[in-house]
Amino acid sequence: MAKEKTEKRRFSVWNWMEGFRGDKVILIVALLLMLTSVISVFSSTPLLALERGIDRVTIMTSQLKVVGIGLVLILLLYIFGRSKAYRIIGKYGFFLSLVMLVILVGNLNLGIIQAGEINGARRIIKVFGKQLHVYEFVKVFMVLYLSWALDAYKRGEFKITRWLAGRYPKIAGIDSPMGQKVFYIYLPTLITIVLTMTGSNSSALFIGLVLVLIILIGGVRFKDLLVFGTVAAVFVGIVFVGHTTGLLKNNRLDTAISRITNDDEATMDILLNSKPGSPEYEAARDELKQPIGALLAIEEGGLFGKGIGNSTQKYTVPVIFGDYMFSFLIEETGIIGAILLILLYFSLLARGTTVAKDCDDYFDKITVAGLTILITGQAFMHMMVNVHFPFVPQTGQTLPLVSHGTTSFLVFSAVFGILLSISRETYLKMKRREANAITIIEHEPDEIESRLNDLDILDTQDQTQEHEDYGV
Image 1 (cartoon, one colour):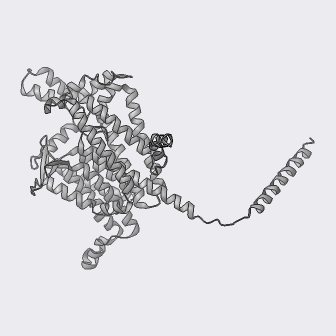
Image 2 (cartoon, rainbow, N blue to C red):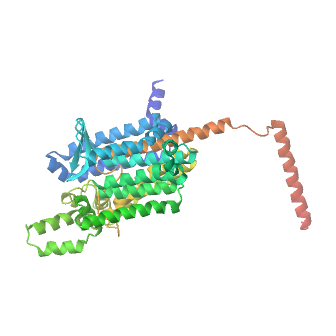
Image 3 (cartoon, one colour):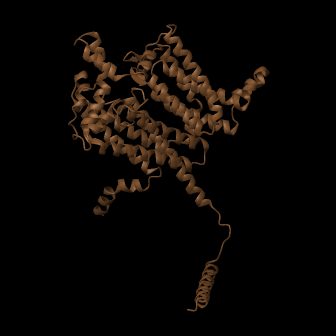
């Protein structure tokens, strides 16, 4: 009896995995990324430890806690998460995003909720003293919102435009198909991008690209989307002209323009021709420290890397554990490690696409597709920034579920939990349909056996006739 209990205890994890009803590939990808995070954060944070006056073991312990919370969050959402709840969150997703962004942009102090800054940019709000990176939440809220809006448009469930059209006949066009798309889809997307630009141009660019892709996936005609694109382009042009003429002053615009027009060779010339210690020298050195250090890490990593813990650029690149984690991983694990990491994200993209196809609910389908694009899109953008991919501005985006950062890590953990819960619901729906399927024509066992015998006789006669035809 004791032996049987031991065997049950030993194989309980495998039994649980066997009974797992969500997508196993998505779960395995999440677990492997979390494991990578623990190892890489411990190895890449000597500068962070020095800055905070602590040792790296403390940082690793803290990261282990974050990973543990993230894992619990994934499992809780997998077990208790429901599509109906995500639909409700999606319905109010734009409102939630708008509230957070207005607090941030307005630099509001509401007592327990306060706007805050990081590196001179408004990116966080403090709730009971805890920092929350607003744009990480906005990404997910807006993906869920667009999933709800596209589903509601398809079902014809928009109520506000219907009420406005009935109340004010002069704007009855707002309840037309195009009016509904502008009011519920295009306008919220544009407002979100504009408000995000005030604190983070990189987040505005990335969120904008993800939302546009979701709109396209949702079935909105490309022709209609061109109207939205034209309006957005005109707005950006006005902002740019206002900035260059001095009418509009914003440090984030200066940062965006400098990153888009960034010329590392020109900055290097300034560094080489300036007096060490001068303001020009220090500014040029700081500007080149991260991107050049990241490229050096990639070059020094080579094919097989230096080995875990042997990075040298982690002592010079200030945020290599965040915005330049991919470069760090290449330095320590080489191109081989980079390929394995890329394969993980490609596996997620493939499985997310499969789960989305299997979903019979339109909201679920768009949600899975959108969240999969959110994770993999940010991962590949992070990688392109690290390798100086042409036309990609040098801007910070963390590597999902790998880079150091509490808010980002937990938000992406929640995203994985949502994906797993929807895949679980889809699996259970398919099983229920199979169980409830009614056989169109029922046959008795004897009748089936008789039919099979008839087929055998016919097959024998055909072979005999064929032999006779060929004179065999």
